[in-house]
Structures are given as C-alpha cells and as structure tokens.
Length: 219
Length: 249
Image 1: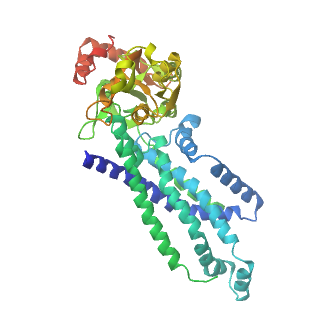
Image 2: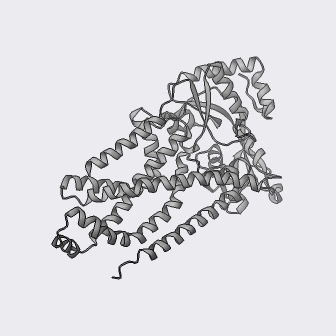
Image 3: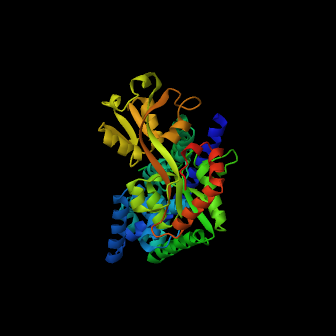
C-alpha cells in the first residue's frame, strides 16, 4: 500500500512541479511587460494595465481558475479547453501565469522605481543610451533588490498550485485525496505536506545561495 | 510593450485552440472516484457499474467513451460549459440536479445512512435517539437535506470522505453518507475500522444527467429499457454487487 500511495503521489507531484515551472516561465517575463505597462507615460495604457492588475490581485485565484476554465463554454458557448485533462492543465497554467505576472509586475515596479535618479543621470553623463542605462546600470541593482520578494512569491506559488484542484487538475493534493475518497485511507492526503516541505526547503536553500552570490555591491 | 502583450495573449489563445480540437464521436463522461459506480482497476482503467453502463451506451450509439474526473461541486458548470457531455456517477436525483440538468429515468436505489463510532452504535439505532448529535454532511448532498429535516446541528463539509474524517477525528459526532459508499469506505481495511452505520434516514434514486435540452436523455432512457429487458443491466449490476438496488425500467 505504501508503495502504491507513493507512486500515485509522485505522479501528482510531477504535475504540481510542471504547473510550478511553467507558471514561472510564463509569469516572470510577462510580469516585466506588465510592469513597464504600469509605468508607461501613455496614460490610457497605464490606466488599463493598472486596472487589470487591480482586478487580478483583487480577486481570489480560485475564482480566476473557474472563470478561465468555465467561462469560454458558459458565456461564449465555445469550450476552448477541450474535454480531457490536458485542457484543465493548460487552463490552470493560464490562470496562474496571469495571476503571478501581476504580483511579479508590482515587485519589478518597486525594484525599478527604487533605483535612484542619480544612477540614470550618471549613465547619461557617460554617454549611454536609455536602453544601455537600463540593462548595464539599473537592471543589476533591480535584480538584487527584488530577489527576496520574488523568492517569497515563488515559495507561495509552490503551495498555491494546490488550488488548481478546483477545476480537477490532478496535482498532488488531488492524488492524496483520491485515496480518501475511494479507499477510505486518510494519511496520503496529509503526507502530501512532506512533498511541499522538501521542495520549498530546496528552493529556500537555492535562493539563499543566489542572494549571497548577488551581494556584489555593498550599499 | 503593447505589442509584446498582444503577442503573448495571442500565443496563449493559440496554444489553447490545439487542445480544444475534438470531434463529436466521443461521449465525455464526467465522474469522480466513487466505488462501486466508477473506480479504477489495477491497470488504471475505469470500471464500475456506471462506467460499464456508460461504455455500453456509447457503444450502442457507435461512439467512443472518455472518462474525465471532475470536481463534484462543479458538475452543472461542467455540463453547461461543454467540458463534459454527461454526469454518470451514482448521482442522487435531488431538486438541484433535476433543476440544472436533463435527467434520465432513475436506475438505482440508494439510502442515506448515519455513521457513528462502533462503540456507541448501540445507542443510535432509531431516528429519535439521534437528537442532540452534531452531524457532518457533504455540502449540497442528499445527506444534508436529511439532517436538516431531523433538525440536528450540522457542519457542511466538502465531500462525503471529509464528513467521515470529521467523525473519525471526533470533530463531529456522526455523519450522513450514501449507503453504497458506507459499504465501501468504513470497517476493516480502511482508515475507519471503528466506524459503523446505523439508521437509514431516507431512500433516494440515482440518475444520469445531461445538459439541458440534450438529445442524449431520450436515447439513454431507451437504452436502459433495452438493457433491462435483455438482462445485460442486471448482469453488470451483479458484477459490482448492486443488483439489489437496481430499479426496473
């Protein structure tokens, strides 16, 4: 029984990891795009982006999952997700990427706006273009500053993946609960906590190491 | 920046369309893991009384069958959104279900039973003896309706399995779950060897649900009639030990 449970949980956790990895791969770059949008000097774009961020950050992720998965079929009469498990997985990724991109965008914005004006001016004095100043002067400082809040979000994401079960995405909690529903066995559900703990432990060590490596300027 | 955002949005939509391409020669059956109606055999294939009947029904229409696990609370949304074609999973024909779906004729009887700790079971053999007990029930279930009628205090939890866990953990005195489920989930060999069921509160009927206005409903009623008449329905029922509960079609 133990082996059977472990192999089911492993399979579920693999889905959790896939959701986690693909969400980061999508949300980290998309967040930067949204951050630039929310700092745009073109006011309508700025207003639009900030409204979007407000809506996404202002509603529960669980609700967003259900809206993204069910609304195409319910409201527009066209279920774009298909019927299999693949569609549930992609809908989950879409919801998580949008949600986390908005949170990341605010972290990026804080990081970028936190770099003092003097840094830009110094770059300009040295004859750099705006792009050069951003990539050669500002970005390195931004990365260093945003790493702690980003790592916080990333570790939250590890656990938030469990919300995808609301649209029957079969991640590790689902796999654990399956034993409760079909065999009347409780412990696999609680045992899933071990997976989350180990994984977030590894991430914590990795972020700690990266932060150390990035301590290149003393402020 | 706007362009990049647009491009990303476009990419996302595109990747989605590839998933959504299925033709209508597949009957997509929404289920949960619910022995003995729908559950997996050792090789991971879906079996059970409902699963086998669904396979036979699809075959009678020349269609393939695909089983998809759903979150039970969302079953009506799943039907309406077209992510499944049918809910076929030992579904009690409640007012909520009948209002939100096109339902087949009932095909199976079930009861709601009270589950308590075995060592206290002797005290709770009649409806009257249940007064004062604090219940756990599945939100929106037939069990919840039954407890409401009793007038006892109760907590609505996520599903029947959680209701059982409440009793085992002592956070509720008793719970009300399906008789068929109680048969499979409590007693020796489960996490609940010390639980047992006593009083039957209500009896109820199982049906199959389609989207409102579906053409399948009439076809399934006819299929049930034929399968009952030629004995294949009873044969399948015997295979899963539910022959006592089958309703004549």
